[in-house]
Length: 86
Image (cartoon, rainbow, N blue to C red; front, top):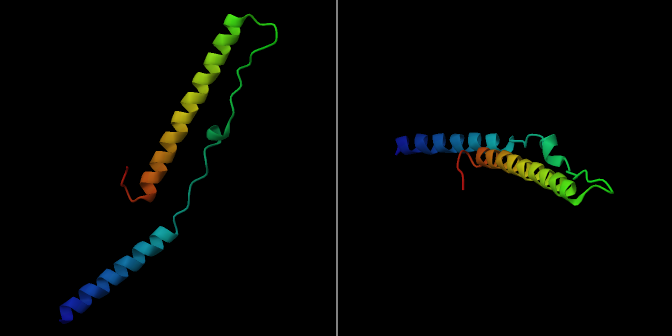
């Protein structure tokens, strides 16, 4: 039975160490890029085809940013889950 006591003690120490490690995890700063807003840049009096192109380009930039920020979040989530993803 003495061997079981040492195993239990090692498990308790390991659990305490893991708990301390988890408690010290901090989120990294949110990427500045993810806080940006996009504008179309359409000007009064521009032809509609130019306005549509500008708007479509702005939407493309916003969607690309959303993908980058989502990938950033997914990596952070995996790190906090101990390497496990959804």
